Image 1: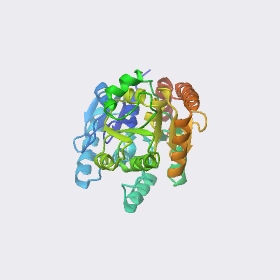
Image 2 (image 1 turned 90 degrees about the horizontal axis):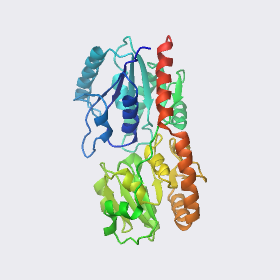
Image 3 (image 1 turned 90 degrees about the vertical axis):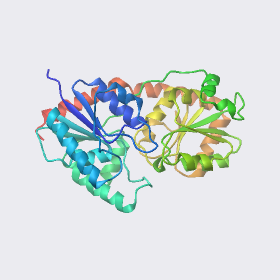
Image 4 (image 1 turned 120 degrees about the horizontal axis):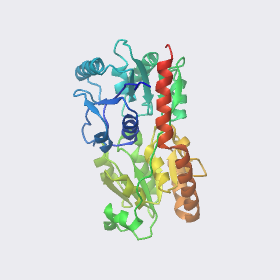
Length: 369
């Protein structure tokens, strides 16, 4: 059987679930090559990039920049011409915009939505309208559209994107992180310097500190629960403002190693305005933690409400009630954490994710589309 040559294109591989998702696929499937730009500003590149074959697109970046985007488009064209892929597989909006804009070739196009930008407060109404129109047009250039979570696909089709196209959902494959004894993990994260009793319940938030993750909402929740301890990990454009606005019961630690973070906390929480299928929450479940998450994107596909955690609206009152319930009930925390670990092992295996991509590539090449 011939090796399928797949060129994966993504704007940048910043720390987070999307980077790990892409790098695992590139690393596991022979014939794959990753073309990506560089992280920008306060972002940090994910360490998974070092394990895969990468071609750098010097002018590729997340922000819209007509001059640099045109140069990045030329770079992509040259990579395609040299690599001669069977499939060009783009990820997220910016890479999808450029990679799917090139005139047709002998290759097939696949695009993966790792979420969408329609609820991202950092984009203006005009920018969102541009994104919407672009996605509608570019979807028609693809042989297959993939979403990381079924709910994300439903939301995109509700916006009339890709209504006549083939869609599949491929959940992420996630490996359990090494576990560390709780007190040792808290020491590693320097949490021993916080006025934190040894056996205190600690609620953990880990994500990019950017508007779509809504870290400010976590601060509102914490302000309503002054006797509950919170820790927030992640970097991004809002890091300094979140540090400055954090109440006394919130420790903001910046970028953190997930294996120590999830070992140190007792409850995981997400306050996002929009998500794909967050790998961080799956890692938290594999660590045996109950998860509280807002009902956005495919969060409800990760967290089984009432069984492995609590899914709430983005209302402060509901989040406060969920945190209060879990903090007060150790037996419930333990039961939800155990159920979450079992479900995550079953639903989010690495083997399933890789095999689903192999089958998708074979299916696309077998079609005449």
